Length: 181
Image 1 (cartoon, one colour):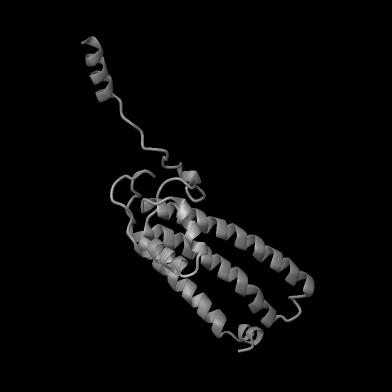
Image 2: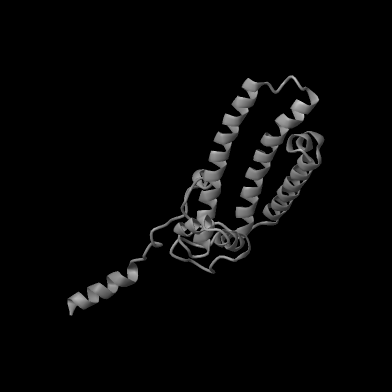
């Protein structure tokens, strides 16, 4: 009888932690694989990375058009290596953010391997961007905090800037010359 009373007392006073995952500290959230991330934050982070990469890609072409002697063979080689490094870092960042987005939907990060299959990768992108996460806690942690209006405005500004930079690069003369348009 005493054993039963002790087991009921301990079971009511013990709280179980969230399974496997916890929310990372604020300083490591951008590069963490743990936790969940909402749609607006996911798209905003990828748009910011895309804008940085697009500007880094098209500014040298613009400078080469204005000052033709600036882009020599050696500087072009350095730029190629810099772009490869930048692309690698940004790809790793995008994979980490996509894994957290899948966690928000209650799926494992291993589902990212579906991105290697043609046509299914399109479906994966659609689910990452447009599908809601699971309500409440799931095995990957508590739900992400709701997006604020400033985060939503930041996302739209970054998206518009990305479109503007890509449009300007495509419509701009040096790029048309390099692409043969």
